[in-house]
Amino acid sequence: MLEVRGLQVSYGAVRALEAVSLTAAPGGITAILGANGAGKSSLLRAISGVAPVAGGQILLDGRDITTLPAAARAKLGLAHAMEGRRLFRQLTVEDNLKLAWSFGARATPLPAAIAEIYGRFPILEQKARTMAGLLSGGQQQMVILSCTTIRSPRYLLLDEPSLGLAPIIVQQIYGFITEYAQRSGITVVIAEQMATLALRVSRHGFVLRRGRLVLEGDSRTLLEGGGESGALAASY
Ligand code: ATP
Image 1 (cartoon, helix red, strand yellow):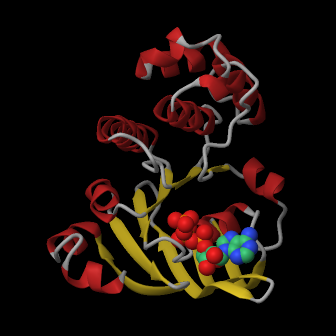
Image 2 (tube, rainbow, N blue to C red):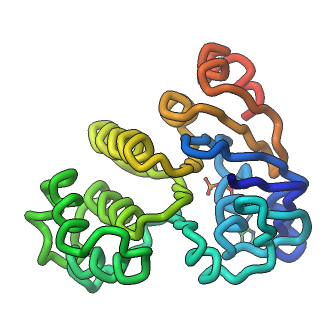
């Protein structure tokens, strides 16, 4: 179980998160919603160990990991696909996948792990020898997702997987995330500005506004509460 208690994140004088407490239910998708600058990325970055925590606790399976370095958290099975499509742009698609696999749990042998990804995203097989930096935005997002899942994480943090992508690609990416979460049974946390998108695939949603938690609930209830309108919109 992934739990955050009274978490505060500060960048110098800028307070990005103010006493945020939440739990990501095991084996399901949790959505973190909020407008631009609400603190979604800061929350995920604090959990994975790359944002400055000014107070509070982060617990992974009951263990306090608040002061553990990012690499040690990765070893515990935490994988974070950050906003902004971070991949090795000068390496080929396949080399990105191989490298990611080598850093992971190696639960599946490399050829089988790569074949599985190519089965899911055939375009990546066609582009296997292309430099990742030359791919379209959607293809890069597929590589990023593949690189995080090929590590066989136990916890997956996804920051705005829909950002800047065409609707058809967003559908594909979300289809993959949903299917992967079901198949693997791991805990997934998605930070997303597009509330309805993330609520449709998640069990539970938390809404941040200016660094504070302002609304939470069962995803279906939040959606029925008006999706982009109603309580959800009011809290943005
Ligand atoms: P976005 O969708 O734009 O990523 P977000 O909800 O993820 O938004 P954060 O990126 O966590 O929000 O930002 C929360 C606040 O912290 C914002 O006011 C932002 O300007 C500030 N912030 C984020 N990163 C830094 C940083 N490295 N230095 C200073 N301030 C920062």
